[in-house]
Image 1 (tube, rainbow over the protein chains, first blue to last red):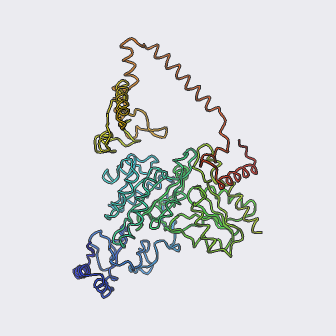
Image 2: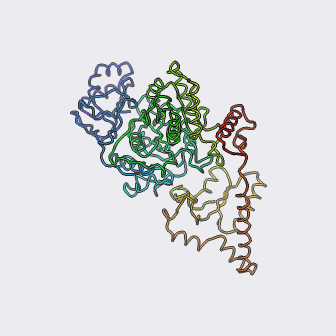
Image 3: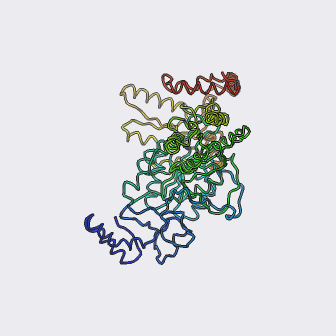
Length: 434
Length: 175
């Protein structure tokens, strides 16, 4: 395969000489010319700053392909470095110290619900990236939750189209399109239906970069799916499959808690260099309304957000569960317990640093999620925290989760980890720590 | 039953080949396509297919062609993706109930009054059944943890006990 680094004819000759010969002569050639390689400054593929001046123009939208994998990753969020230095910043794309967007500086906002914010993010992504396409079951007329409304009218039927009823087809097509350099925004109609696509997600999507030694990747994939309890969903319209997905190295899993972070996280996910599964809590599509900036902004992946500061107990959740946890924290406050509430936002790679810092302060942890408790993502959080913070913990870590049964219809309200169960867990850790 | 739609997706976005029955030979099966809105045709097709299956011990795929007159579900408004004219045409030309009614009338086996009284009878029966079902109490809470496995494993026994304890402490009544 040809390394298309079109910066100068010298580089093309260099590249060809590297392709000839065996692995030893090749690495010698690379080593001897390392400086020339390092002097080539690739830009994030989909960034408007892709054409930024650094003395060299990248003539076509072809991604720089490293012939060796020891170099550190490009950080897509370091476009505007304060020193104006366009060189690599070898920070990780999942660095939890990446700053949040400066919301006041973003200017005007609109009151949007979750599906409108998702719609706005997709529209922005399609506007800034001509290769972006949206596809899935019933997306052409606007989608069963209206997330893709008006996209067909704005961008045309060659970019917004229905697929047949085939989730492995949707995921597989996303992999193929992204591996050819495009931005594929696929929709799985309900997260409960993601399972036929698991082979494509786990065995193709997640392993694409690794198995090719970074010669190819399908970072342009974003798969969106509505997840979570909705009051009447039953077995197959209520599941939260984040822990199945989190068990997949190479994948990124994101879940927003509301419209404002959904837009920023979805834009980050679409523009991420890695394949992302973006889970949207469906109960929030209409129910959650927030002021969402009209501007194009991105929220860092791999970073948790402390949405409520506290001193006594650390409470961790994601998605719609945070509304329940806010209620529980309010009730706990009446007991004089001050809770620090943290939204994980990115399930994989997850921001353990923020949680660890918080638990070192409070000494107590409660994790809560709708998905069944056994092997839910709360188990990962609990295991890591006890390993890192054992001597800071004043009480056993509590997990308040769904039971180990399929998601039932009639008893949904008993099944869910509601604010009463979480309040009990918060009180319990306080009692145990005294 | 091929009714032309999967929510908003018409069949020409679903497959490029000749419907579903064309896949039967690909799987080594016999196949038959039938007008799904013709009661007698469907009966004949199924009867033949059944005989074939019993004689040869091999499967038959039946594709019954019809048209989805209504919305996909109560959360769907199909006027958002299809023309009312298309629905009216399909309904006028090929509504299976209407076709059967006309057939029965033509042979004098049923008339309008008969049809009306049968409809009333059946409507009442359905409403009574719904009423009966809705008035039944919720199932017992123990059913929530049953039938996950053949027998309840220890962790489910513990979780159920935890839930009952929680509900008792918070004064929530349950069965």
